[in-house]
Image 1 (cartoon, helix red, strand yellow):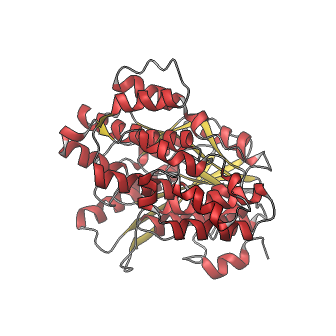
Image 2 (cartoon, helix red, strand yellow):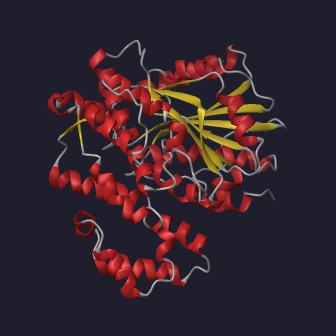
Image 3 (cartoon, helix red, strand yellow):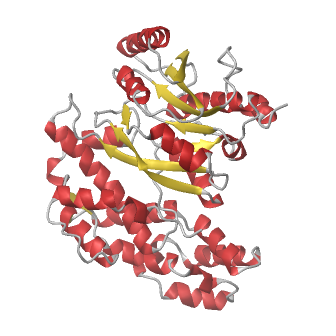
Length: 425
């Protein structure tokens, strides 16, 4: 029995999907969910143009559709299968290409989470057959292009380093997308800058794990995937909730030397994400360049900076700390809930270090995200995005930012990826 056999028997959605055995020495398996994708061949071609790593590799595409899929989407899936068959039979490259047609699901909540889990579970099964717990399960979307060092950097920075558990990658919206209108590309870039602004602000406020959690640009070791319970089945946000469990356990990092170029296409499949956000930004041009004031991150600073000072405090002392928090934070979380959480964490940890780590998992990125969203609902977004980005960079100590335009702001925040994703643990 392999290292994950018991887990797979209990938790995998499907029995074994691929009949042929994996090659000995397989170290990286890339999983791609695909539903009504018009550009799948370009994604596979982008993978094939990468530099080959020292290990064997596989690519597994899960072609799927929810019960609500229309006939055009089902026909697109059939074309995808034909394209993948032709590629597998004709093209020669360093990885083995596999695909599984999951058909049209009868499950009412079938979505990207189910599809991604199907592929990642199968990748785990193949590493289990090889007794390779260190194998890399990489997750990609079917509308992406990647930098040529995708496989080699995953091999060098993740597979070869036993201390690492997984990684995210540098995710940007494709600037030279041949089919998208200029305004569509800019809308996607506005969305990207907003995401980077959020993570930059959380890092400035003191949260330690400000790492992008996109399923289009992440990789995880096989044994870590199983220990974390595998990918969840959410219809959207499955990547965020999955990595939210893994990142605080340690060894997760941002492989910012790898770039994944994400499509700026329009989509309404899920209630958030690039596709939906681009659609909304194009609809409401007047608000496209507006964002919330960076002072909201200042309000989070007392929560996240130096939390070890709360370790072993008396309830009355924690109450005093709470009373000195910004009013918007106190409106977001009441005193009883905050104090009881801090007391519970403190009573179940023996050192200030373990207290701090557990504190950050309780008052985590999601806590900050929900706080920001609550303020936006009450106050709206009234700050010019370029001005806000400049103000936030100055607050964080970057004195010579030279942010004077949208694209200079986007360039600065992209270049700051290593600083944003730094973890002190």
